Image 1 (tube, one colour):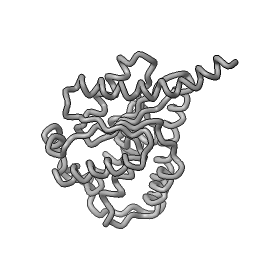
Image 2 (cartoon, one colour):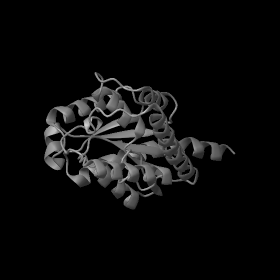
Image 3 (cartoon, one colour):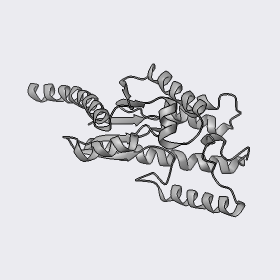
Length: 234
């Protein structure tokens, strides 16, 4: 069947809506987290969980805490990774991304609608926009090129949109300027993305859910129509 990515800034309601669709959509649905947070992942490679565990141990030993209102790409300061370490991290990241993509293909082959909570292609493209004036190492550049040019895109993308002030009030994280820059980057992405739908996330939860499911059902029916036509012809 189809894959649907729910994207938007933190506080927009991606996970809540995705889980609602998983439980109540009229056709079989599989939920798949497609972001970088291992803690939020419902599925992850053992190597990814091990690397996150070792990273947390290192932070604890160094007395490092993650600042709540600092953008993620600046949380760890100017610490530079060695070339070998950076490539190992990239190799595991690519393996993780392909692992989840193969799971998605398998779910779809069995007739499920796959709901992505976030999506790598969009999150990392946003990081590029947010860090346009910062130097990036080769492994980061290679990873973004791979996602933009090789990694499969979802069949449709639903962007849950809300002003920076609303997002800040909901989560209390980052700054209004940073949240607004992310919002504008999402909107810019939408202009070059097929089947991109913007949904006003400031509406009541049930209204947002209904708007999203209506859009998903439209694409679902379009994808099924060619199959029905071919079956009737045979």
